[in-house]
Length: 165
Image (cartoon, rainbow, N blue to C red; front, side, top):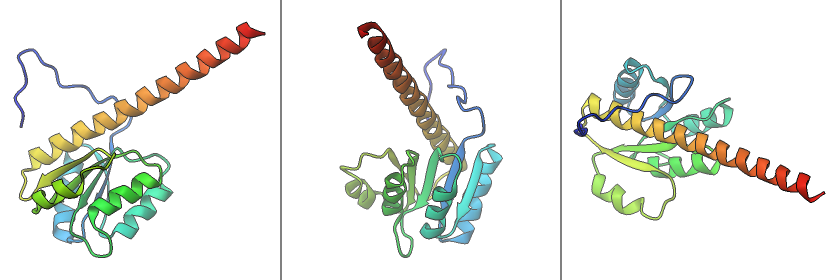
């Protein structure tokens, strides 16, 4: 856990609903553990054992996820490729790769535009909650900033159009 400066305040949940977290791990024990830890932190968790199930859930979701937590070493598609595919679908969720091979991941994720953090195994539940919550806040704030920017651009365009006529 990171120490905070005196007087620093933990940012409030800026989402109206609980943050939506997608967890993918082919190990059922690890999947259940992560789902339980994040669920106990009052996060809305959807958990899947395969990348294919996770992609289907992203496609079917009414609202985008805030954070995708994926095991790196999975059959068919590794966690980094899964995060990339999810972003190709238009979901701007932040990503957490969970792995014991952190050095390998650090080298492989260079050059990617997605927000991807690596959480090394073994990890403490508090570390997982802190990382996922901060990334969810970041994702929500980025979405709000994008909506404000789009609204400002639309208003500016409308104002210019009205005053040019």
